[in-house]
Image 1 (cartoon, rainbow, N blue to C red):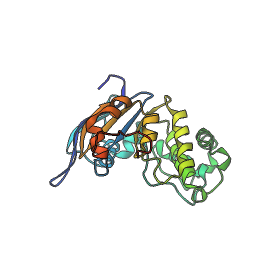
Image 2 (image 1 turned 90 degrees about the horizontal axis):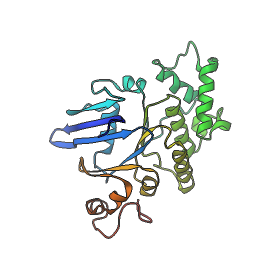
Image 3 (image 1 turned 120 degrees about the vertical axis):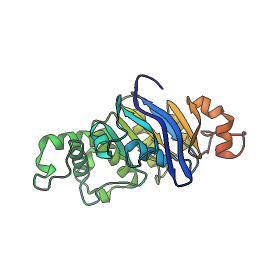
Length: 259
């Protein structure tokens, strides 16, 4: 753990009856870095994201955001303090335009939901910030298109714009490559590479090529426990990580074709 951590988890534990989903997890995300969390299905990654956002209450442990203990705070309070999230499944308003989706996200960051009596499309400053966020993710020309009409990869970009417009301290990216084709995944990889260094990101992802291309540090979960954490090359060489993923020490995550 370091003093420059924007987000810090200490001893996070979650039990569902006799099942331990997360077991004393320590993890931090530093300013400007991409910290990836990887692990087989059922490793506890989604539960960890839920505990960090406040959607899942921990049985033990603490969460700190920018030095503040937010363990007891709701997801909305954490969001207003600078914690933004994208989801495994696209989470946009299909009937709203791309611009309206981002404007609503900006309103939520300000502490209120969509104001039907004062629509976002009448707020010039809100629209300007939304348009800027769309431009940052390459969707500026599609601002007026209904979100439901966007391609899957474009919806993923839209979700990132919805996170960026909230001026977050840290963004939690929950499997952003899920459901994308090769071209869409390559575009998202390039976008995240462009954003790297501008804000802290926690990346949960199954695409190992993306993880090893982007991450500054990697934490590996297996059965709810951290089995390894460190720089990508150290993780690639770790026999325990190789065994957890492939049942062998002959190859490592991030090798050609590994997912």
